[in-house]
Structures are given as C-alpha cells and as structure tokens.
Amino acid sequence: MKKLLLSFPIVMGILFFGILRSDNNVSSKHHSSSNSEVTQSKYPTKSKLRIYYIRHAEGGHNVKKEWGIYPESEWPAYVGNHSAFTPKGIMQQSRVSKKLNRFNFDFVAVSPAWRCKNTVLPYLEESKIKAEIWPELAEIYATNLIVSPDLPEYTSTEKILGAGDEITLLPEEEPYFTLRNDGTHEFKKLRFPRDHSESAKENAMAKVIIDRVLKLIENRSASHKTILLSGHGSSGKAVLRMLTNDPLNGFPQLTNTGVWMVEQQEDGTFKLKMFNDVPFSE
Image 1: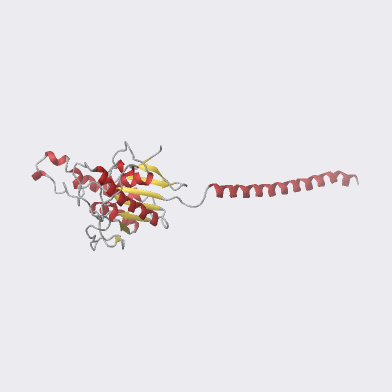
Image 2: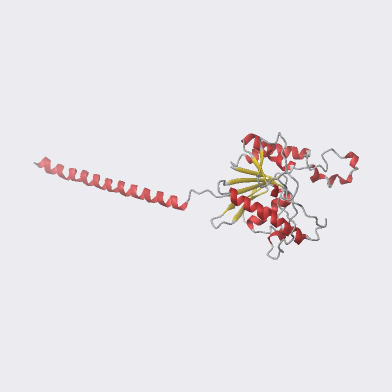
C-alpha cells in the first residue's frame, strides 16, 4: 500500500505532463497555421509585370561622325551602314544571349530594323522564342517634351500608324520573327527641320506612336509578365519616359546593348529598376 501511495504522485505527474504537452502541440499547430495565413496574405502569388528594353548593338551609322575626319575612301565598309555592325557591335552582339538568358522572357517584340532584329537573333535561336515585329518600335526623335503637360496634341490629318512602307521578312528570318496582322507596315515618318526647331510637333507625333507601344504592352501583359522590347536609343528613352511619366532629366544615353527595366507597382504605375544594366534606386 505504501508503494502504491508513493507511485500515485508519479503517475499523476506523468498524466499532467502528457496533457500539457498535448495542449502545447495543439497551440503550436494553430500558431503555425496562423503564420502560414499571414505569409500568404503578405506575399501575394501574383507576379509583377516587368518590361525590359535593349538597345541594338553598335551599327555603322553610330560611328559615321567619328570617321568624318578621314576621307570616305578610307572608311571601312560598315561605316554609315544602318544594316551592319561595327567590330565593337559584333562583340556586343556575341554577349547578348548570356545577358538576356538571366531573365526568362515569355514575350519578345522587336523593331523591324535589321540592327535590332540581329542584336537579339542569337538569343532567339538559343531560347527558341519567336519575336513579334512591332513597327512602332522603329527609331524616332523624341525628348523630355513627350511627357510635358504642355505638349500640344497631334492635330494633323495625315495618318501615321500603318501608313509607311510594307514590312517583309526574309525566308531565313521567318523561323525567328513574326508579323502582327495589324502591323504589316511601318509608321509614316513626317518631315521636320533637321535642326529640330519644331521639336514640339515632332514630340507630338512621337507620342502618337509611343501611345500605341504602351497599348500593345497592356494587351500582351494579360498573358505575359516578363516582356522584352528590342529597339533604338531615342525611342527607347521615349518608351521609358512615358511608362514612368518621368522626363528623365540628366539621364545618360542608353548605351548599345544597354538594358533598362521597369516593374509595375500595386497602383498600376511603373518604377525604374535598372538602367544600362545597372540596378537603379531613387
């Protein structure tokens, strides 16, 4: 009997410890479940839209000015040629695939210009992605006026979009590029003074074109979240200015094969995250 009485507290202690441990397990499981719910609400699974833009590799037209000090008879064949890369441009092009493979693009759109198509061609060959030709990504002149609230509206009755030359793909290009049904012609480039003395009118025309680019981005973003655009320097900054609604005062030129990237925010606006391959922070 004495042994039984001595063992009774021990048994009760074991039972109490078991109940306490069971309660702690229930509490721990409930706490873990709460944390999971908080985590899911804090970090939504919906991916953000990211727009990347790469300028073409250095072309012969980019170095014409620096070769101006020499007689034309001494110029290499590529100088002044919009459809040929310089030796530097060839080197830049050879590095594009490695640069772009980091980003897992699910849609690519390209200017119809030879230099833009061929800048990303090695990447397209390697990634098995077929790029869509966007005539609206062709080269245009635009400045920070394009986002000015004082910019006059384009009032000319002359049609711009789709009113230029027909775009054709060479047989060797067809495996890598495709034309939109509503994008088989370039936009019409209106004539302005070469000194850009009518800059406001030029920017008003450019805005019509870039507005179309933004609409195309909006349409494609319904099913694609990581979009690459391949184009030119001036038009590339015009797209960036209008996406961010920022005049980009003091920003450097977009370098050949330089990349910028913007990310869409919760309120629908776009924030610049990278410029000329370098992370950007305000």
